[in-house]
Image (tube, rainbow, N blue to C red; front, side, top):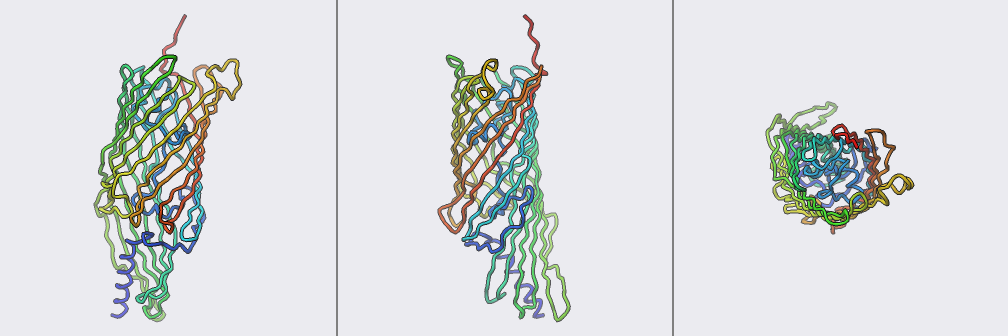
Length: 441
């Protein structure tokens, strides 16, 4: 009877403390396990649906992430579906991304890194006014592994280990049509993902005769997703132009289910007993992702240079995952981006290869979706990028795109940690002019 009492007390402490993970001055004692693919170590990715990824085209990443008003003729803009109808050629776009981060928390530094697919998309223009696309993009990534050491009257000295993994993805179809420079578009897709989170307590309290307790939660999410976009292309003199872009989505609900179980291992004399103290299966719930809207502007000269700026708004007050929004900002967030691209010349007959390359750069400031101890996180960074044209064949041509991004995410409370990151993206655009009607003199 006494042993059962201690089991219930230990489980109660484990469950109640799970709501305070990292929100109350965490003290990470154990460095992360060796980095694995798609398991970049970010302790705060335990909140919500994890760390949101930059799934924009490599071209846009090289310009600080600015993308809403970026009209492309030979590349698929993954941010604004209204740009699809401006494609002049079939475009197959894909990229891989490598990330490395250093996370400083309570005087302890952890290092992590990962590499994986960033996006895959196919854009198809039907004529000068209509186009469609199909694409796949990872949206978020969750991975953390850390350990706290604690000491209290109930359990004595003990260790609590936190571990989680998972993420969200989306596959979508995009449609767009334009008339006299005004284009409207929409994406319709399926959002899906899974998450696994566990919390393990190891106690050295001999009086309790307890070895450890485990609290584990697994979740699956799936549902239809949609967003919309608009773009106005305004030609002005000397091949110059102004583009005005708009994109957005309303708050959307997705079906979810979860399984929970809690296990306590106890030692009585020389005998070990394994008791399952709580288990729930197929518990229905939902994920609510917030409304988000963005406005972008671009000014440039055709095929030579372009300057872009944009602002985005996201209402995080509507976010919830199984009615849980711990660690998530209870209000709207904003981000601001500025970028530029330059090509020395569009005449490829007499100039060198470097004159035909595209050069890019950009800056950004972003309010993060996290908020802990009433303090919000901010990210500031910059990027550069290049496009390397490959030899053009009869009806086929391609480019390799490179983007390098570096920045820092932190809050004004020092013990909540600082993350420094470096990202490199390598993308490829393959074009074919299947739908271009031949012209004869």
